[in-house]
Amino acid sequence: CHNEAANLHETVAALRALDYPDFENLLIDDGSTDATPTMIDHYAREDSRIRAVHLARNQGKAVGLNTAAALARHDYFLCIDGDSLVDPHSLRWMMRQMLTSPRVGAVSGNPRIRTRSTLLGRIQVGEFSSIIGPIKRAQRTYGKMFTVSGVMVCFRRAALHDAGYWNPDALTEDIDVSWRLQLRHWDVRFEPAAMCWILMPETFRGLWRQRLRWSMGGTQVLFGQQGLFGRW
Image (cartoon, rainbow, N blue to C red; front, side, top):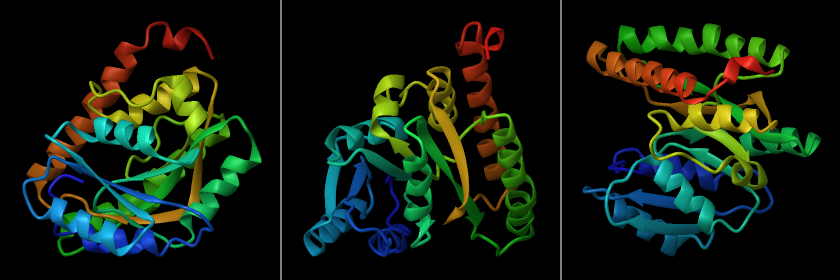
């Protein structure tokens, strides 16, 4: 979480409501300058399943995820953004995929847009519902996915360790780790029943900057993996 005070209460409430027998919540304060650190400490005192971790300065999502992975007590990680609202049953659906095969290294969730106050927001609702989901289904038909959804994805610790965890230098850590896992022969899957609701930009400037970063991150991975298209 970096300066997520406006959204944190809803996010934590959704995490605490997960229908799963045994889990812990690690809330990583990535050098926030708003009320986020205070809120995280309050949640940790209130619920023994919540652990508060504070980074001294803002270092980005990859560093936050690597920190959480080093501190986590369990062998499976459900990674979300600071404004993602997870469905109560999402973790059971994702773990069902994980337990199906020891080769499954990551399972991508199914994000849905909850910012619908503008026309641009409503257009993105249609985009995610009718385009992104079918694209991930199509990619699964030949066994490879371009990227997991960074706003909600479940990882196996052993797979992440094999791939070298998250790269702090990657523009889009979710695309980068998806490709490195599959290059190490781990299976990456899509679980449409594992839902979460996310915030998206509702201005053309914000949307342009987001999509430009996604595009640059994908291009960075393509050029960074030598001989990628020479082997299946």
